[in-house]
Length: 198
Image (cartoon, rainbow, N blue to C red):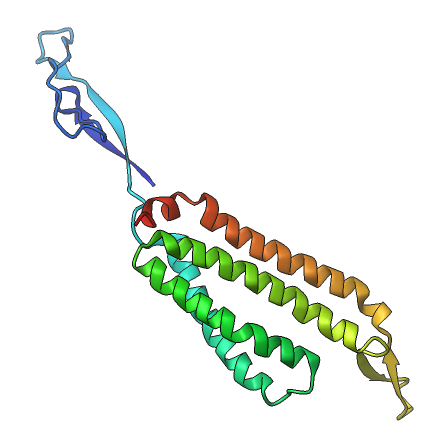
């Protein structure tokens, strides 16, 4: 964020060199015998992006919530253990929870390692999101859901997994795009580059 600060030319300072540079003030002599008026010059002062704030804080909160969700999913998947999706969750949930917590701690300490942990955790989360969509689709390839065949019949019909293929592909694409966009923030953000330096 930039602020305009009015200064006289004789009081002008640069951000890189904080010492004042003396110059003779410019004056304009108005007509009619009035006192001379000094010109005001504006310089742009940029606010420092170093420190936790903005989107970086938002993603720290998201990582905290994700670690809670992963921990909950881990214990909930133990109840549905024979299911293939539960096995995938049992494998990935503790890794993701530990990765998110480590990212939060290292970013809060402003360590460069926090960025690396965040990117690795986002990669693992992307793989888990794709597998969590593909595994149920592949394991049960004959039926994926039930509905009544008609309003007046109690017979149950199933739709085949081929009918849900566009939903599967769109879910995979959305998961990949979301994870790539979050990873791009950690790669190109000026705040991340200025904050995570140790």
